[in-house]
Image 1 (cartoon, helix red, strand yellow):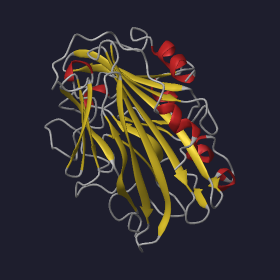
Image 2: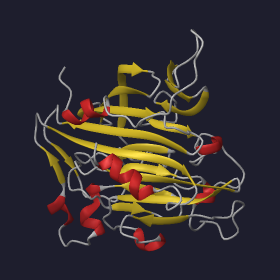
Image 3: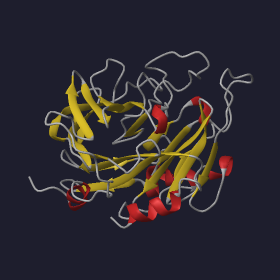
Length: 335
C-alpha cells in the first residue's frame, strides 16, 4: 500500500541524537516498543515513556496513558484509569492523550457513554501495520474503524506515531502523532463542534484554574500560544502551537502541542481550557468564531478521498521560553 506523503516523511525524518555508548548484543534499542495485551508499551532508554491503549474496557477510542515526561513525571491526569486523591473527576471522556471528534456524520465519537439520549460511536483498533524500535527513533502505524452504535462503519483512519530519542530524554521527550482520515464508506462530515480534535488532559497541577474551590492539588499552570496570548484568552484562538507549563511534584515542566503547516486550515483553532483540557481543533471553527451558520464551515471529505493531519507533543523541562518551544516548533515545521 502506498502511504500518504506525510506518513512517509514521519517514518524517515527524525531529530539528530547524541552518540550512544557501546551496547551489549542483547541490549534494547534506545526507543523500544513492545506489543502488549490490548496495547503497546513504549520505553526510552529502558524506562517507560508511555503506553498506547485500545483494549481497555473503559475505552471507546485509543489513548496514550500514562505519559511520563522529563524526570518520569506524570504529565496527564490519571482519572479515570486511576482514582488519585486530589484529582478532578469531571469529564470522564478526557482520557490522557487522544484524537477523536464529537460529530462525525452525526455520530458522537468523543463521548464514552450515552449523550443526549444517543449512544456514542466507537473507534475500533483493527491492527498494527508496523511496529519499529530503533536507536534514533521508533514508531508504529495503527489502523482503526469508526463504528456507529448501529454497527455501521462511518469511516476509517491510519495513525502514524514516532517517538524520538533526543540527546537528553530527561529534558525533552517528543511524540509525533499523525492521522489520515479515509472516507472509505462514503462522504465524511466533521460537524462544527468545539469538543474534538487532537486532545490532551494535563496533570492537575498544570491546570491554570482548579474546578474545586479548595483543590487538594493546587494549580500552578499557565497557557501560552505562539501569538503570545495567555491563559483564559487563549481559548478559541488560532495559533501554530500552545504550551502548558507549571509544576509537577514541585518540578518545572510543560508540554507543547504543535500544529504542522501542512495541516488543513493551519494554523488551527484551540479549545484550550484553563482546567487542563487542550485540543487542536479545526472542526470547531464556527463556534470559536461565533458564526451565524456554524454548519457552513463543517469539514468535509469526499467519498473515496482522505485528509491528513500531523501534530507533535514536546514534553519539556522549564517553561516555554526555557525549553525553546518556538525554535522546536520551527524545526518541526521544516520537516
